[in-house]
Length: 229
Image (cartoon, rainbow, N blue to C red; front, side, top):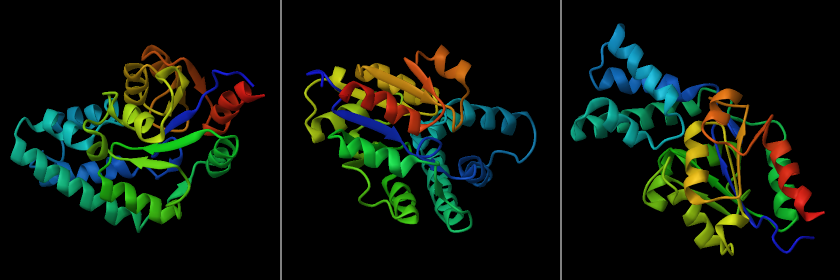
């Protein structure tokens, strides 16, 4: 075993370890209407494109950018959270195939696992409860737990501090969006991988600077564990 093995992995949730059936865009449509963005037309299309491009970022930051008004942004964010949490009950929330087993293998090998999200803590908890994943990871973090959401490094660095990793180059990050990649790079993680199970494709992830692109979290776990053999 190398004396410089990965000690901590930070895994995104929706699109990376969790399949949510496209609920983000469905909930956004509800929130956009509540915020007064017309249901059809160029403004709505630009807003939807922005949501897709910034997938993975803290949702309140997305609404602030779209609406340029704090009260409207807060109202839209609250509407988004209500809609997403209500839709969780309507859709079969499932793990990405092999995700739970991959997390188990990582932890079994002594690698700490943090699950991170751009959702609020309450929405993250609803997802964890829907999956019965309350104890699957060493740590779960929402932007409110860390300071700032993606693309800032706070989620990864908070995980490093709370789980006592020795250095940033002993951290690996996995996500399905360019925002996840930006966060991992900003935090100085040694492995900053993109997965093809979510929002962004290989070209987008590589253009954002991903060190690796993998089919899923299963192959990511194999990549990390290869250093332990």
